[in-house]
Length: 110
Image (cartoon, rainbow, N blue to C red):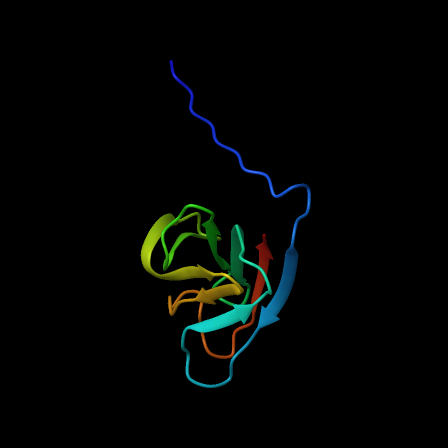
């Protein structure tokens, strides 16, 4: 049995930002500026029917995410997910996550 494992280090320094986002206007993709390129992003909508969350891990494609909810449903979405940039990330318009007047909590780790 062959095992392949990879790991990268950032020299012992981690950038971590957390925050909340809520929009009372039309739902649209939005950018969060963190000041660093995240290696992991998690966005949670606690106001949806219980909760729904998206996670993006370093190495995943742009506009994708691992999505899960309180109902136990899990999927990898290939559009309307999370896109990482050099200074933050964009949350796409997935209608389970990005909902007008519902608060999102997020964490980005670089």
